Image 1 (cartoon, rainbow, N blue to C red):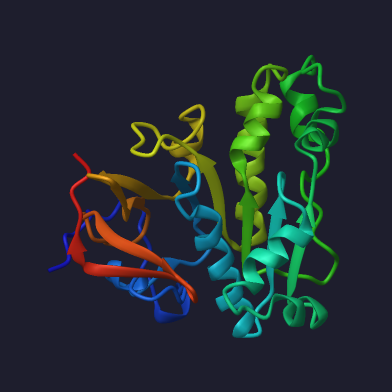
Image 2 (image 1 turned 30 degrees about the horizontal axis):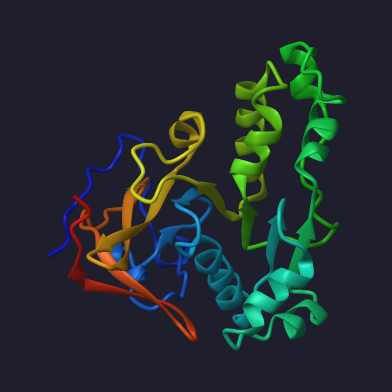
Length: 261
């Protein structure tokens, strides 16, 4: 039975056309509407190697396979490494790139500072911070259905110790993603069983949703699990359930509950 989340007071009616389906087997079943409300900004949190990037790249593959545009912004891995990681699952990433429906953009996280703040000194006023240009360049005429940022943690690491106006910048970054209309996934690095789902906690407050991926010790082995911490504008399961990474990608098992205590 679906464990209901209370709708926020400003919740809108979700029509089938307003639902974004990830296409990850078993995952969309965790939502009462069969997916994530379109346009939501979602944190994907978890420890190293748990499958956060695979989860988001699988979503991109599924979106591109439906001939919808998708943009993947990497602050750590090269385009070539991302392509190889997707090809090993049998995903035809190079075809989607040639067709112009999948765009991988590699950026240096310090460039975010230079674009937004003009320097890495962080000495600008709030007005100057909000007046700078867009942090991520989306090609003219390219209107992504999905944007993935891998990872938000890299931006924080480059920013938090240098920029006095990080909170303002983060608000502007979220505003930017909201204005694109895309469903956005922001990857964050945490502990294996996190108490907090982002580097500063500000991100969690601004995000519409949080999806946590866990790596749970079971004797001498690890078990992967997934939980929807929050998701605005929809009801969702409140259980932690198992997932596995197969040779074709991630498969979620909604009926296999996992204890993370």
